Length: 518
Ligand code: FAD
Ligand code: DLZ
Ligand code: SF4
Image (cartoon, rainbow, N blue to C red; front, top):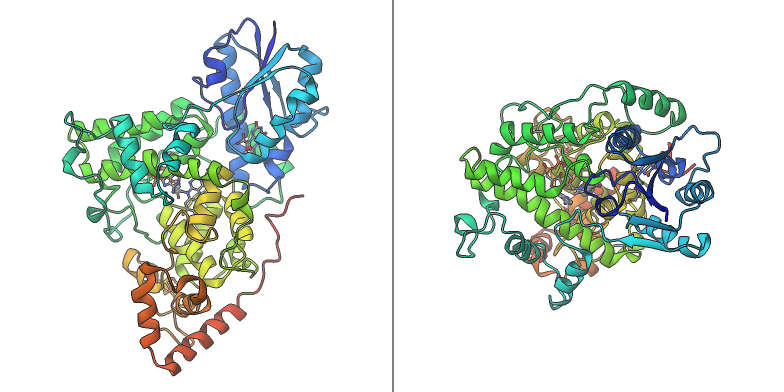
């Protein structure tokens, strides 16, 4: 009996369910570099390098562990370019009795795999991806018991109880509180702390960089400073360094931005978590241990663990609950094209320019840059959510539809009408000024709302609310905001809307079309 075990590029965990119980003597592990995965959206070059290099390293690890690995390279002349095409060729080569794989992270791929059994005429066994704390069936059970409103905070508390993370023996949360958000609202620090560990490309990565530069030359982003972890051992070093150096102040500066500071106190571990090099339980256990040993305060550790046990797991559950519909939603009816500067960074708005620079150079931006600068501006400007989602999927090395769609479409663009977030994450320049030092050097004046020097976020904020009053006016959490709008004089409101119209007219559409598939 021969079993073909396809392992996809975001399944690079030695404890993967399909490998865990398999017999190396009768299994053939299939790893496939396929063009379709790099081009269904035109991924940032660094993401392609990351996945291909990590796949090649993982294949070596498997071989050393006694596995038979059939590895198909991108430049193999017979490469069909797709998962289904490569599994078909592998079936011809190995004549397996069955195919066994872990469910993929994206709906698009899951749909393709569902057809394999009838196409290949052999059993296809699809296993749960148990590299998450919460299985999808447990998430759906939790969701169906919520009386309609699926609050992340409720899910998070359920997960804390279930995992025992930061829980006391009496069943109470450590420190007597579930949430230390109030301690975690500090503004920007004076200087950038030492960033995440950087890993110089070895021979395998250098070869992949050359391949990607040649084959995907037209894709967005820089790869000449590629330094992401591509093995589990590197990912663990990255995590250990974060726990020691940046975790203690992670909470305090979680929402802050500093010009030129790419990671601030963030961990930079999402690329490793999402392709399987690092497991979420390792990250949480390391953070909890730092609290127990007194090396990091509870507010920081709780904040970090909430991101992983709460947000990451909740987002994944929401993706599978809401997909495929979510990708097409557009509650606010936004239709404008994505402005060119999302690709070029060529804007006088300092906050946006810095976020795009980080994105282009590192295939990274931290949460507040993504949510309150890039996402916020797109929503205020009324950019079509599908274009915003495609952009986010292209530009980040940690982007997969399961994590990107709920974050972008539901959280940052309110395209789902509020099933995930109770109100839109809309903010004027004042928020960015409070949380960053960008406004100090910006050509615009954050205090001004109209006139040639006015911060564009200010008029766009009010215009967004006015434009969408029929859809958002009844939202209780926006009651005070709409009261303020109504109390403004008619002239003031007209001036703000005229200013916003000028800002929008100057945006113009993107011409590069990086996101479009080739
Ligand atoms: P840290 O701030 O150090 O947080 C630690 C970990 O918590 C992260 O590595 C991540 O695994 C997890 N986490 C935190 N917030 C979230 C969240 N909202 N959803 C899921 N996991 C979370 N994350 C992705 O992994 N891929 C994406 O494509 C992605 N797109 C996003 C788009 C938007 C508009 C927004 C607002 C957020 C997005 N996020 C995405 C979530 C978050 O921004 C990134 O996980 C984070 O910036 C990764 O950097 P880090 O490892 O330094 O995170
Ligand atoms: C992102 C990516 C890229 C760029 N290339 C490959 C690849 O060549 N082979 C592969 O197995 N996986 C790749 N991936 C990751 C897949 O896109 C990911 O496994 C699916 O989207 C399922 O989540
Ligand atoms: Fe951004 Fe406005 Fe501040 Fe400039 S003034 S950095 S555009 S918020």
